[in-house]
Image (cartoon, rainbow, N blue to C red; front, top):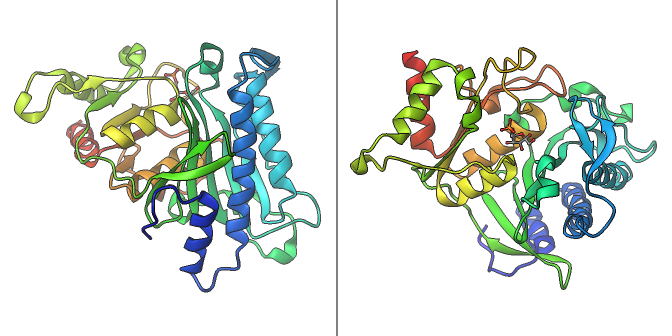
Length: 339
Ligand code: P6P
């Protein structure tokens, strides 16, 4: 659906809904509620340096990571608003160990998995951060009221919506409902997101490669060989690629989506507890995999699986993630197949 630049995200969602006569409007309303939460987080993130919400909360989350005050604020903002929106039956958050119930009597037909504030280690150094979200239809009957884990543990290919909000030089909402990837920029003076990047497509070939080279001694040899390959001089083949690594997945993904790039967080031997890399399937890899495939790119684990095909086994399951421009993900895949 082609819409003119400047159309509001609310208008875009409603117009998109009209393309589906069977739509009840619940998904549109769910997205609108999530957008209100995003605007609330954006306002706080942009004031973080002034308000008393930077720094550590003194708590440790289910990941064993120190919880920043902003993490807690973002998580609570989303949970509180979405639990009573009436369109969800269950939620999962990076910050919460278990399934998050909705308010009794407000159960709906969708689930929401989210990373409330991805890249929170970058908050205190004023580097861009983001919120990631993934929406599925519930599997259990609405008559059951509250949802169950099986409603959340669904393949990425079953997502109905995937998206993120990036709190950077401007706040942008980027999402897909399966009909292309569209970017909306927040005008804080009027508090509305306006269509600024319709039908985003990732360039077929990468300009940048994004990987934490501090982990290079822990990588599989195939990854080491690939990273050496992208640094070789072969101007006809567009190499060497430039290195860009922000340390916030949302930001590295967004830049690569716009410019062409490949992001890798492979499995490594650095932390015996993380043989499958660091990133999470449900609320990081899977939503980005839907977005990148909708934008013409690819997302794989590097051990022969497409991210969208993985049947989740637990809420916080980690997966290796290789994602970005199709040519370059194909190339990495060939390096890995060669062993
Ligand atoms: P490392 C941020 O903490 C995060 O979860 C992602 O946003 C980011 O891509 C990754 O971790 C960075 O991890 O090990 O390179 O610091």
